[in-house]
Image (cartoon, rainbow, N blue to C red; front, side, top):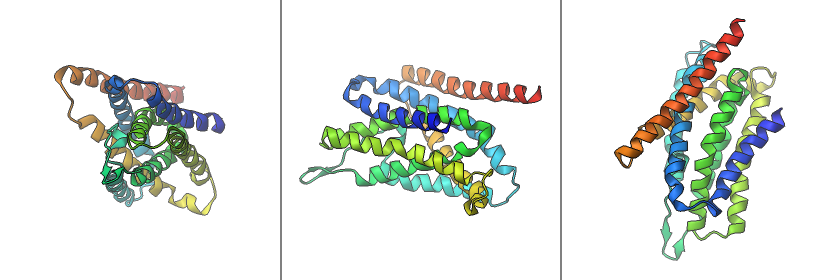
Length: 245
């Protein structure tokens, strides 16, 4: 089962990145709608599953680490420049576009960290879906930046593979650090979860409150947001109903 989930995480990012070679530029709006859907879904998962679980420990420092995660994502975005939100920026050197090393490192770290909560059994499948959907536009934006930076197609594919394996690596690590394990680091799992929750809260709220291009697009974005949140809420109540029987 862990192998299937790892493959889902990998394939969503890798295929999302590869689509940059085939999808027309006019599809950016569709990608932004996917982002809006995933942002609302992740926010709802945080509120319904992740935050209640991590606060069950009654550790007063959990809230501090949520804020640390929120601030850490702000720092990461100084290097990624919002690729997690589907933003595409290419910087020019005096010799031409430069390879975005800071972007690659920050984006890979983000992908690795966001898979750590998957050790939480209560919301594992729901969160897996949210992360996989979120990866599609992020990987597409990454691929676009690499190509616009005149990185070769072969090297772009290698970089997309590197990005795509980050979440499966985080998921595998989470299986060994989770509450069910007896490892030394498992005692710090609540803190790790809290940091990732802070990251999710920053990502999702930035996506949700980002200014839209026009009123018509804003209408579709609103539908995508309510759809994402609605699915998360319906899954939550169906899970609660299953537990009550």
